[in-house]
Length: 437
Ligand code: XUL
Ligand code: CO
Image 1: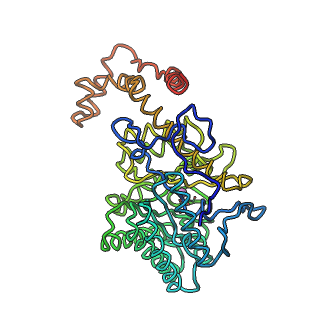
Image 2 (image 1 turned 90 degrees about the vertical axis):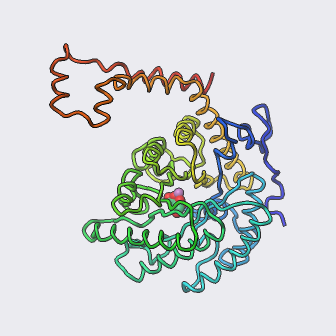
Image 3 (image 1 turned 45 degrees about the vertical axis):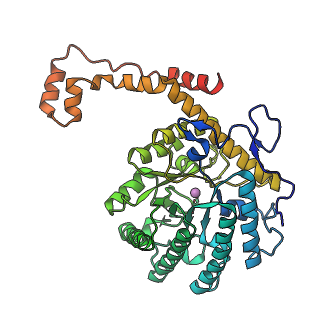
């Protein structure tokens, strides 16, 4: 049975194409800086948004039909979602999927009942993976939706809730390993606080670190060789979330000795909620050797919450791809943690959204590669620091100086030094020139 019978297989047709269901930039076999586009851009479908989200918001119910011909909340519906998802990925040429445990099946009344359902759906998914060659990018456990997690999961005040979180992580890791997933994500949806009046921050953070350590040890013991990933987000749903941004999460991982096994999964909309650019979060992760994966979406700069829109802004994707190329690529991939706008409620809109996102990143990749080949950005950056390519500069970098000798150097300068122009407007012109000719 076809779930998207009126929608074609989408392929590359070039920039002259007038077809609505074609890629203009995403050409998987095209080689860019020595690697195929499909290798630079391992795209993934987010099970929850694409197969689950039906347009509900705070003010109204569903606008889209994601029943796929079955009654939501049943195993038949869970299976229909698998079939629809695999058809969707095949038609779009999306090679990977990402999932939370409860995206796959409705949660049962007990841990065991949920596990049984997960085992049943996992058999079905594994079969589909074999038939199609499609793969799993990462798995995770939803430890934020259920009532029991209202005070957090790893940060919960209840030791029983903490153990329920452990149970979900264990099972989600089992599934991730079964599916050959490249990563396992921790997004700390309720790991934070609403008020410090009732919260022991240090106690909660130590407990989260222990849970992650046990997850790491369990994962490695069952043969998981991929990356554990933290997905930073500063707020929403909690007033304050502990994994505020990449710098905070990296500090936490180092404090608790988890930095060898964990990397970052950077989401564009989370970066802007933290008051950073997407590029900033990628840079901070990459310079610490922890750029693992990306949740590819974008926010709305006029709104203060996570709107999870499909990537559209070519400046943003170009700047992001500059960081990705300089880091040598991702160990993970690009998961479209994005949903159609509420009024974009047709199956066609689901296709338009992925075509938009995939083409936006493909064009960003092409433009970032052009900027690198053009050389003016990198050239100016090197020139800007050229005073360090001196005996004195090298001695400082190698830790061979002391404060007094530098002070003596400064004391004998003639007048005050001039560090030179930052040439921001010139560099922005260069970017525009490469983007628009
Ligand atoms: C929420 C979010 C999650 C994570 C996975 O803001 O991004 O969907 O990606 O739990
Ligand atoms: Co995300």
